Length: 317
Image 1 (tube, rainbow, N blue to C red):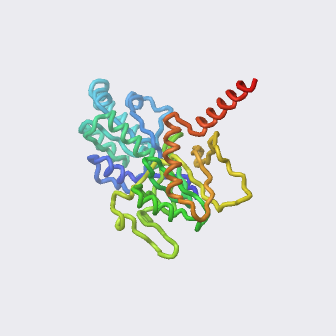
Image 2 (cartoon, rainbow, N blue to C red):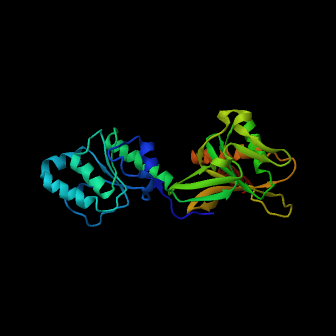
């Protein structure tokens, strides 16, 4: 299931960023942020409004504040802000505890544009705002799977219902790893190379085990055994063992599965009685980490076999 558009209530943004609101008369619950990027309105304060992206949070620092004080008369500033606030921007934020001029607050109240302030430096506030909005407004899907943090690697376990995903996750938790989500995983695309998995709030920390029912992992094993979110690094697909199938035993080349346009390394694991899935998942996670660090066991074995064959051929000449 994929959603198409997301938004953040301005009231939630104010609370998250610990902002001071100079226009409390405006209902911020009815204002939504839909663009994850920000704008520093230096050009707009100079009177240039072409190509102005009105959906972005507007952020001012010392530079913009000094510009207002030195470059315009009060009447010109009033005219500039009257025009700036005539656009449907979500808000205007001043950093470094700068108190907005009275005419800015009055213009904000007139047009229904909240005027806010942050104690953070401009650069740090911009960075944190972009990070927060990109996470909250990221494209996302929900899939049927289990997500576990194994040695710091986010392992997404997929497979048909009843194949043993939750049982494998429970064994991994007993071995010291951490549960992120069981049954449903919400995947957000944070960047072109990063997917973050989380759990729906209603099922967070719970695992369903057939024959037993619902298990509260946080209560049973402790808070250190659960995690709110995790980057997805590896996909494990479980399927019933097929004795006639031709499984790749060396895996010289990685296989991938795609979510939201991002490719994630994937392993197909056949399941049959007697196979310890938890140990297999652990081994897959460690092997994946080794590959990221530059060591590929399959290629090393292939290299040794090739070198041995060359030596045998040379000795037979």
